[in-house]
Amino acid sequence: MSDAALPLGGSGHRRVWSLTWPVVVANLTTPLVGVVDTAVMGRLPDAAYIGAVAVGAAIFNAVYWMFGFLRMGTTGLVAQAFGARDSAELVAVPIRAIGIGLTLGVLLVLLRQPLTDFMLWIFSASATVEELAESYVALRILGAPALFTYLVVLGALFGLQRMGTALLISVLLNVGNVVLSVTFVLGLGWGIEGVALATAISEWLAATVGVLLLALRLRSHGGRRPRADALLRRERLLALTGMSLNLILRTLFVQLPFFAFTVLAAGFGDRILAANAVLMQMFFIMAYGLDALAHTAESLAGHAFGARDRAALRRAAGYTLLWSVLVALAITLTYAVAGGAVIDLITTLPEVRATARDYLPWMLAAPLAAVGAFHLDGVFIGTTRITELRNSMFLAFVCYAVALWLALEPLGNHGLWLGMIVFMTARTVLLALLYPRLERMAEDR
Image (cartoon, rainbow, N blue to C red; front, top):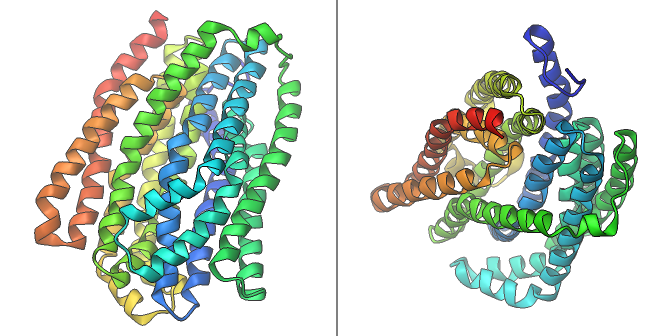
């Protein structure tokens, strides 16, 4: 058994947490950015500032998460190359992905104006919110090439099980963003433009440092520089393209409910839009906490799949599921006890606080509904079974759309939250039904 494999018993639990705790810390700094950005805007005299950040963030979540395949695909392919001891492919995978990421990032910057116009047209927010959101988007999009590079670096480090290094660059990105946001907005008075500029600068800093650290880690794992013809091997490029397209479709079906959530909430007025933005920051805290164990599942499952070890794959899935459920229960308990205090920390506006409390019970149900979805997502991404993942996400989205169609008119904003819970539950059930096939494939490959 290699050092990267998952042992049995208590050693297995320790191995899971040795990989997970750096990602927990890194992931908890990620929603901190959204919380601080929302809190900084919440100190300004109009709820429209919070709404504008919510709209702007929704635009970038919809666009950037569509390119999440750069991180997810890299993790699975690197983990499998690591498990198969393929030293050339270990380096070739991130090089190919960084090239794709930089190209896509530059194209996004070049298309920023028509993209911004189209996305803002979709929202039915107030004129003030749209004007502020446009200023936010125009500056933040300058960080797109850097963010895509950062995603590849993060994915490669996860695949190598170098979570400590991933923690370092994530903290650099997110804490740097927080410091710059507070400095630019509260210190220099730059308003919403300061929040956007802080994010773009932090993305470039993290990407630059991340590439340098990844090169060192690849060398320490025995990675060797691939030949130019190996980088451009037709079958590898076709496999990467096919997987990327399926991951884009999978991410589209994941993001559509979140995008629709903000679009429909904007139609309920600035107060409910702002309240949902506050609660959504709590949702993201929950999501990034569960995602930490999902990343560990990606790395361990991918390594086992690459080594063709069915027993190791089962251990990876079982150990990470157990800890995912325990973390979900802890988050639910925390929100039950301190949810109101968290809301008060994010905004000082009395009407937004009161409205957010009305919908807080949905945040108690969210971790329990989402835990299986996040965990199994990680297992399927690590094993690069993306076709199955894509199909299950499409069916889960159909379940969401049906729930929203039935619940939105009679329940209003409660219907929006109910639809989100249905979506998470459907993802869990559909992936669980497909998992046994995954174990059989680990032996048959």
